[in-house]
Length: 159
Image (cartoon, rainbow, N blue to C red; front, side):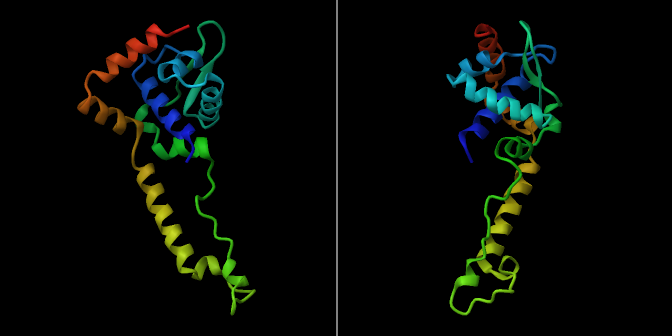
């Protein structure tokens, strides 16, 4: 996964601590972690297209969560940034191996393909089972000062 997934997850979590009626500009969100605004904006636009964030233009514009944190899974964010394609693509190279059969479906019979597919299904199931609300709750429990620090930090860097 690219760094955009990390940036998107942290940004969504930060937006979960901001008042719902307040949009936060890209520049403010980027400055919070010293990220390049143009690249972060690309990730934020992908989240808007996926219905995870909403955006408002104008002087009071920016981004906010489009859904409640309990309705946003980690998989939703990963898929919005990385796309829905599978992480492992079996190209059926066994067909070219000595004894390979041209008509065989090696995706269904190859042990490596099956292992990788099972691992990906497990990974996707785990990400689909964790929501932004779960992460928010865990952070609040382990690091109770973070929500306030985040709100203050985003308020101070607002442009």
